[in-house]
Length: 67
Ligand SMILES: Cc1cc2nc3c(=O)[nH]c(=O)nc-3n(C[C@H](O)[C@H](O)[C@H](O)COP(=O)(O)OP(=O)(O)OC[C@H]3O[C@@H](n4cnc5c(N)ncnc54)[C@H](O)[C@@H]3O)c2cc1C
Image (cartoon, rainbow, N blue to C red; front, side, top):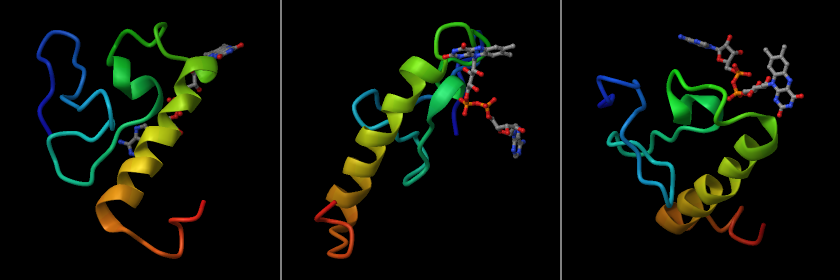
């Protein structure tokens, strides 16, 4: 996984939160590297939805597709 050398925020797709390692996602304050004051409980919990949506989209798991 590639990190920004300054921040060090992992490289990730902002739409899915998937890193440059396939199927490895980041959620919560790790998405703002050392600037942990930018992502906290109130705006970090929203990371779950795009991650779940992407996993469903990629893997078409019929057991969770109806969630
Ligand atoms: C005193 C205080 C008050 C706060 N009050 C608020 C508030 O009122 N409202 C609000 O929205 N936010 C508040 N926050 C911020 C909030 O607590 C964090 O933003 C939130 O907990 C971040 O959640 P997270 O899951 O991203 O990371 P974390 O909760 O930090 O979870 C990361 C987890 O990863 C584990 N970990 C770390 N390294 C490794 C490793 N190498 N291998 C395995 N596990 C590892 C850690 O032990 C930890 O359990 C407060 C923070 C503090 C310190």
